[in-house]
Image (tube, rainbow, N blue to C red; front, side, top):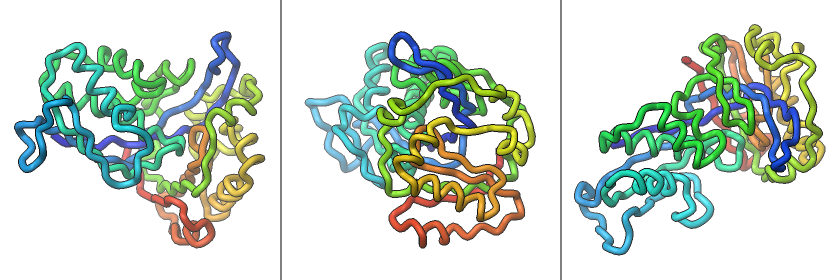
Length: 288
């Protein structure tokens, strides 16, 4: 069985307060985009021509963008083990092709983990509702549960409490996304942030036409500290506006940025690749 985990972007991100446990409470809007990985699971007896090891119950095969770390630490393996502890799952091969850049603020690892849970539920007919799947996915990461329903949502808490926002739609807009070859430390981004309440509620701004978001005050609070340390990232955001974006922002704590363009806009993505060699650049027309 095969599935296609998709990325998300943040439409605004406000860091509102530091919590007693050291984490921060956030306000953001998660929005799914069709930038996808490929994830497949086969049981050992289904997999022709591949070894059937006797000393493990899961083998991870990874292609595409390189994945850092050991296989046992990968979230798709952790997702399998989470459900195997509860259900009698057979040994499996997990095949993943990474297309979503890691460390980009796009939720690629979280999407892979949750889509793995969904895939296992469907493949092995596990008696799990979406609510139950959300609870289990939240054990793997704060934003993992978003990908169970995978629809626009207002996120609060540490990014783990979701309120559906069906009124928010980017259908028809063109999106241009770039992840420059720059590493942004999430730890450093949080360390430099100055929590504050937004002047205007993010839910209110997100319900307005996209063309009004910029002037209405939608923003990503991480941009101030990240742009100061990595001026090139701020320069890319300005370039997206120069190219005709009606709204542009960094996603998460970076380093990816996206621009939203009108449906009839002519976008020359090669311009970004010329100016920022080594960057991952992707564009698509949004249909949902």
